[in-house]
View 1 (tube, one colour):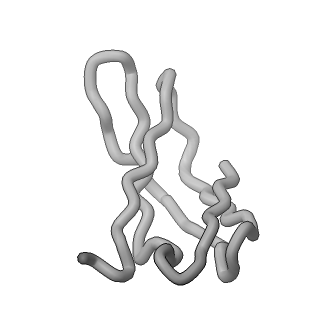
View 2: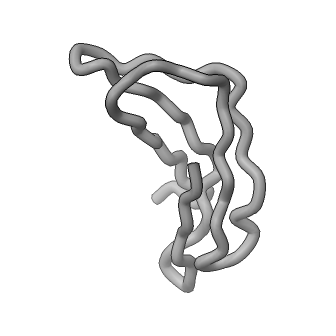
Amino acid sequence: MEVSFATGAAHSLPAAILVEVGDGERWAPVTGAAVAGACASDRPAVVTFDAVRGSRPRLTLTSSRPG
């Protein structure tokens, strides 16, 4: 999947991205997740992971500048 982030004085790229997939009842982390790119504002990051079955992906972002 591709995801882009807008960065600036108040926003920075995430320190980590957790990828999960939902099956309608619960969320489960994917395996083999890797992130490439996202080195600048509005540049897409490519998130790859092992094949999964589910109806919804979810990304949980960890701030690189908490607070």
